[in-house]
Length: 69
Image 1 (cartoon, rainbow, N blue to C red):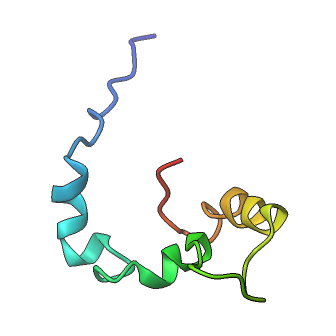
Image 2: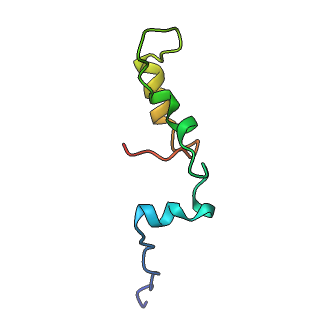
Image 3: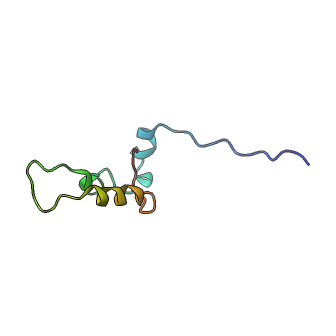
């Protein structure tokens, strides 16, 4: 049986790929995607616990949130 010829892997620079609007689900506005990771300048009730941040990070791929982890 002959070896299967696979197409070459798609390669692009991150900045080139996401500069195209069809690849950027956030349309260049990442504030909402990154908001859970904001560190407040002063204590308030809106701070996420380490467990909540872990849950967001672990589930990021399922929600199509780009990450750099």
